[in-house]
Length: 637
Image (spheres, helix red, strand yellow):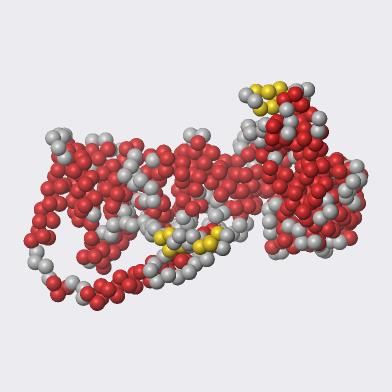
């Protein structure tokens, strides 16, 4: 029986159990019967641990050994092994195989990693492989560790994956506390940007092994004149596990962080802010630090605090102070784009927990505070927007509040919501009866005016205004208002869409107040249209054929430029060669030196109806919308 074949069988069984067959390896059922049972012709190892041991041996003999002569190929092969691991990726078989070879002295993995990078190997590949194996090493040559991080830093300093390798080094030091002193000495000897994260990890692990000694060492380094030493020391104070620590030690750490939050040095301030957020993770009673970080007048505050509480602070959600910290972020203004991803996760969790009122209050506070900048709600809160869109009623309630807001910026934010919602089905968009029932006739009129002033899609205008017919006592409270809005505004701007909607309600033999309302609007629309049709056509006002031709040509040019700009970063543009053709846009492929058939590209666009009033009297239409949007609710005056 061939042991290498059995080892490869074990690897395949772990990584692709649904397709493995013993015959694929030149084996028979009798060859593996001592190790495996069979189900529907596929083998199953009786002892999973035996299978893992064999798989590790397969990696060492068939993946690592053939590539060992070339360090860059060596790490590439192990990275491919990591990808192929599939369902057993978490078991880290490749990392275990490399660690075993390193620990037996067959390979010096750190030296191999250094040579791979110096030889032009991919830094991220080396980092990924070493992250899995480094914590499993028995011994490490610390100078080589510092050299490796120095080589990797220029390419990885702005990449989040860089932190994984430093965390792996921290895990190794956790199991080898006697080596922490050497790492710290080495880090201080070559102090710089590349060694700073490793120094921070060593200080944190030092406190875990000897709290008193290493806390004193950290406070010494906080006062160092070299920022690549002092900043890691400040950050380490936040990352230390403060569970069960003396009150005086915590107070001293907090004092250092608070001093940093008052610093004029931006790097000290950022490190202190991060340290403050991290310290609260294990010292919950120091949550006032979160308030102090939020109070900073910086454009990154919401991202810093929101991402921490949203992505890394799930364990803090049970703390009584947690909701108020999220609330504080609602009033922050002037933040960078895409700063609210962490907050989005928190609010989405609240929304799904049926705490929808808290979400709505947060959004209203945020909208009022940021009305001047009018950020895009669907862009900043994609998860929450999706949840609200699916519920329908909650999105309608949000629109009702934001459209009636006196701040024009908040109305603009409502238009952002409508624009994104308009890319999907708008026929079901409406104001919920629970909101409409509490509004006075004057408030309903104010809402309709704001709809007419801010909503530009025909289906949205129709569905939003028609939803007023669902309020309590609608015949007395809203039917007249709906009639006037539909016949005097919506029906004149979008006659075809309005007619189709009303005919779906008032057509046939149906009866009832709602049908009568639809039929009355249709009759008034017909009378208006008949009057327009009776007017003589003024041929002199038609554009000249030459002007029409120039308009079409210019429009094509602008559409072409818009297409090129929108698709300049697409994967298609990156992998294909564009050749201008006189006949139009087409494409072809080249494979094996042969040119394939020409394919015509289909043009796609998203169109909206233009209100007729824009064509008839654009200035008057703009003035009317401005009047609607700036007008106040008479009930609030």
